[in-house]
Image 1 (cartoon, chains in turn blue, purple):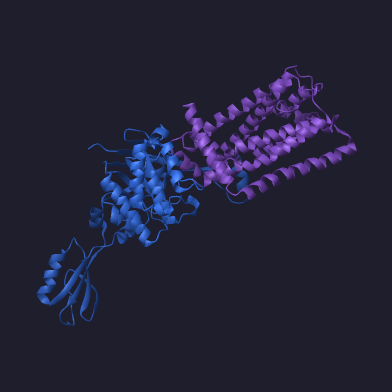
Image 2 (cartoon, rainbow over the protein chains, first blue to last red):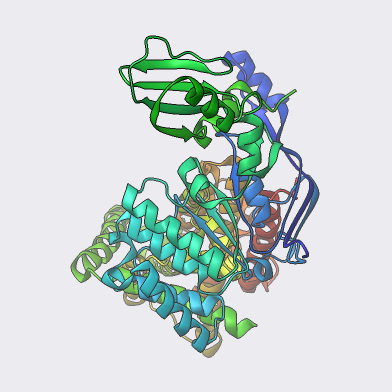
Length: 330
Length: 270
């Protein structure tokens, strides 16, 4: 299938004026400003197929929001190509933004003083959504997002979770093929987060909407994304499935064993024993060296086992190791 | 196309107005205080004038005409161009509201026009109307047909002139991030300046506001025409009618600068 988003060698360099120290520095800055070039995004390339849900990750200041601004047409890149549905985002702004949806978790697109329903009506007008289509979508989203209790409340009086639901609805009323979600669960409680995630999944699966999700909440990623793109210092570090990411950079898996009897020494070759108390022991092992079934058979040959469980390394650990230990940089 | 722009604008303005009159008492109080504070300033000036009898040969009624006209126009401008007020525009850019607007499929300039419409400026307009009425009591103008037709043109020109300065001032904040005081000197200071007969100012200041920023043509020269006064600077006879040219010129130049600024903001202007 043809790509819905095509990004090639996307780069953005900002020129910033540095402030210089002291009075003499300030004076020098007036006459000859000290300019410094900062590459926020460097040669990023990727493609997205229709219907994909991709996590776009990276630590703060990695270049995520700069990329997002270029993809949504807010910013023109220094060099590189972006094509979305055959359109260049920054070239024909109004036409392009009419074809996408975007939710920035920290801000609302709705009108602060308007009741939610009136905001939606205004969106219908702006996006020229046909009445029938609008009513159909409205009914659907009211139902699955549970908007009814606050549909006539002014946006400024909504709770964060309610506002986010209203914003998601607003971004989807015009049936965009592509949806940008920036931190859609930020600041929400566990239940609200879960609702939002279910809705995102629903939109992706039922409406085949392509979604680019940026988030710092790795639970979002784990529950929603099959594919992740990781950038740091403006460069693309990883592009692949979550599974591949774990396989390549995943920390160690852990195996927890409940023995049927007490043994004084339960150490075993190929795996590290990290705890042993009473009947319970925990091992750490590397998937490249030893498979889980090998380890289990080794253990059961020697000891009587009543129960066991294997835990995959948490995505959180993996990502942390990539950010902190710079696993992906040369 | 144009009709769509206009309906979009009206829809936005409607929201602004409805939300402001939601609390009628605080709204009316705002309008009242807005108008009254300026009126007090004018009354205190008239007390001073009574001692000196005139300013630069102009009597109180004649100055009230200058003043009232400038206030009506500036009040209207401040209401219509609220979205482009550099003070609030710089905040809009910093808080990302401008980005949110750019994500909507509608003309961005219309959206900014529609983003704010400060109704309490009605206070300033009302104050202008009162001062204008005083001027007609003290030194009545003979309202011939040409004068009657030209007066709204002058108001309109002043709205365009200062509205243009607002747009230019907002555009500058793309580079400076913070609003800059120099722009306020031109807008608020300029409004103050044209409220007096401009021949009282030092020569260099008059030259500046004739040739560089043609403030003199939007209120002072039209007033010479309305009040039937001679031109102390000996400009050509059509000088009083340059107001629309000055207003439109500043407005169009600012719109062009605004478009350029937007391109810079999106990263292609530099």
